[in-house]
Image (cartoon, rainbow, N blue to C red):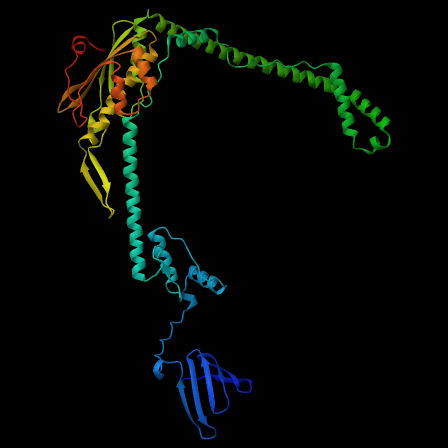
Length: 471
């Protein structure tokens, strides 16, 4: 049998407070008829004084029946709680109505649940229903967050893949503008008459003896400005400053002459570097002027051929491609364009994310496969032609043929002859889709065939591609 604690405090006649192991209660009424209110409920008791006989009954139970006692709550051992749990308990004790925390991942949810599940009254609220969650529901909610995070991640990956495809297909957008003849003439004049853009170093100024002596006196006076002599006897302080200047003048003037010599030497070195840089710049201008003159005059076939090859080889392409150039004269060019294979540009498989977070793959076919490739072919070919017109000012006509590798053989899919005026109009129209490019090609003599799925069909190899050796 264990110990039992009980103590009664009489507050007023007929009113007393009772302290016991079960908590605090209050008793009302005269001796022999009491009503007690405490943590276990409301009880009434009647007794016969001096006999030891009494009757006690719980008054707030339905139908006079006693309520079923609640099982005692598990006592917490603070030494077994984590610092986070103790911090949460302290927040509640300090008077907060509740402690909330935004959780955005399953790991956060489960970690936080492990911290709080041992605390009395601690619970998690479902963000959508607003209801308390059991441990099973908490773990189900964490799995849902995992699934949603996985769906978002895969959706983002697929979106980035499609964005890379669009960027590769439309690398040429926008097409560059074609300059007119006057633009080349102005560039030539600018190169001939351009001044060296750097400023010539200024020579150092030679020191003036009278001014230097006056500066030295001013310096000596400034040294005495805050002394007691200047405040009490300013004239004497001024004479002292002049005397100090006379004494130090020889050394001061020698130092100035030495600094002047050093400045002159530094200026000579700076001028030497300046003249070298100017000479290099003048040489580059002369070379660029000569190159531009050769292109504008059309007299140097080798220079024209070199520039034409550089124009097509220096294109920054997101895929492997090639182009070969042939010049018959300075106003016409032939270009044989080796296109990338369709599977090297357009992924053959499309991916989608299901509601459960799994990946569904389907074969890319029809317009989904051929539409992007057709846009690439038209845009790439026009971009090559535009670069040739930009680099060759005398060029008037560019004839191109484009082929790709399919089923083990080369299939030509496009032939076109584009004039400078037509290319200028095409670039000014700023085409941005396959339909725009098809409309742009209508300004030229173009041969191609698209089936109902936007697939480029094979066409006949141009005669000029067979007859000429293209280097």
